[in-house]
Length: 109
Length: 114
Image (cartoon, rainbow over all chains, first blue to last red):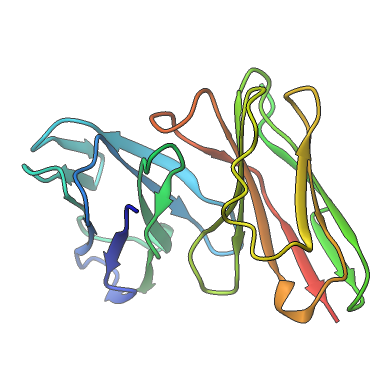
C-alpha cells in the first residue's frame, strides 16, 4: 500500500531562520495535502496540491509538488513563534488518506 | 457552520472498563474517519465510513475496538476491556467525499487508562 515518509522528524530553529520539511511517497500521488497541528490541538488543513510541479504560497509558507508527483515540500521563510507545531503531509491512499509521521517545528525566540 | 464535535474531551478509565467515544461530523459530510494519535506520534488510521457503504475496519488494532455510524451522521467508537496501551488521543475527521477532499478534524478525545 501507499507509504508516505516525512523528514526530518524534528527541527529546531532560531526565530527568523527558514524551515523545510520533505514528504516522499512510495507511489505516484494524485494529490497531496498538508496539515498543521499546534501543540495540544488537532490537525488543521492547510493546502492541497494536485498538478505536477505545482507551487503554491500562503504568506511565508511555500508548498511544492514534485514533477513526478511522488514528493512534496513545505518551506517556511523567516519562522515565527506562531509557526510552532507539527506539519503533516497526506497522500490520498486508495480512498483513505495516508499521513506521514509529521515534522515537529520548534522555534526558539 | 459548526465543525466536527467530539465528546468527551477527556476520559479517564480503569483498565478493563469499556468506553464510548462520540463524534458528530460536519453536516453533509459523507465520509468519516477515526484516527488514533499517541503522545508525540503520527496519525494511526482506525476505521472509515463512507455514506451507507460497509465501513473499512482494516485499521482497528484488535477486536476490542468497534465503531458504528448511525443514520450516516453521528459515530461512536467503542473500546471494550480497555488496556493501558489504549491510552491516546482519538481523533475523528469528516470530509465531503473521500480521498480528494480535505479532512476536518475534531478536537479529539484524550483517553487515559489507569
